[in-house]
Image (tube, rainbow, N blue to C red; front, side):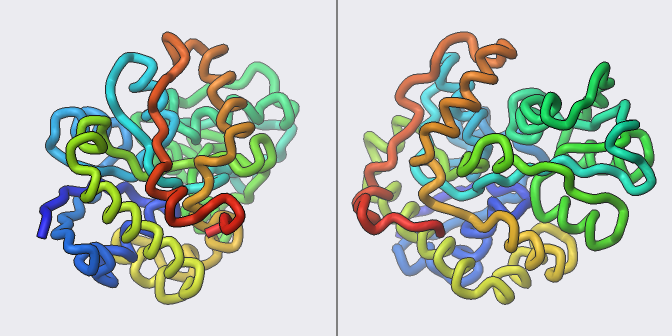
Length: 290
């Protein structure tokens, strides 16, 4: 049995990983997987590059940015899809928004907010930059911001608690855009192809289970995310994990274009995507949202 250290975050986009671990899909692939829930996405790239972790479900945009700097991170399977949302704080009208909370630059929450601002009619916005997604949510809850960008299930949680309402989602701007995705290193793909293949297979099995058993999957995810299952179940109505999201190249190119205009990318990313295993599992004619 091969040992694998897997980094996960908290969100709907991470659910295939939670479920694959809880239902022992990794073990069925002869993998001894240790899961670590990381405090924030920005710590993950260095952990992958150093070998401290072997795989991670992390923002695909951070993998692209790493690739543009010559760092050999590679996406191998989709997961999150259309995962971010702009939430307006209760009691504030859309026309009166002046402060918008966003996390560190370069992630899909930041990019969604930046991309949607023109469609929302907001001018002269003050960006309340926070070190993490949690910080952006707390800025809204604590009335330090009028709106905030966040991923699910937190947007559905704030709606369910009547603290805010969703104004726009990533899919309104970039239909089918991927979010957090399963990533590893180019070296691992080259030298441990069997491990990569089995990780992707188990991850896909986890995503299928989420689609087929949303209530149980929400219960499993609740233990990692730390909020009530009902909010996670509600979030699945808006953005279920989709292992095929990395095939939505039109949306990805649009996001990369924004990253380039905002100077988040030093140069175009290259060799940051390898869906060989995924494509063997799902030939083109059999791809469907998962």
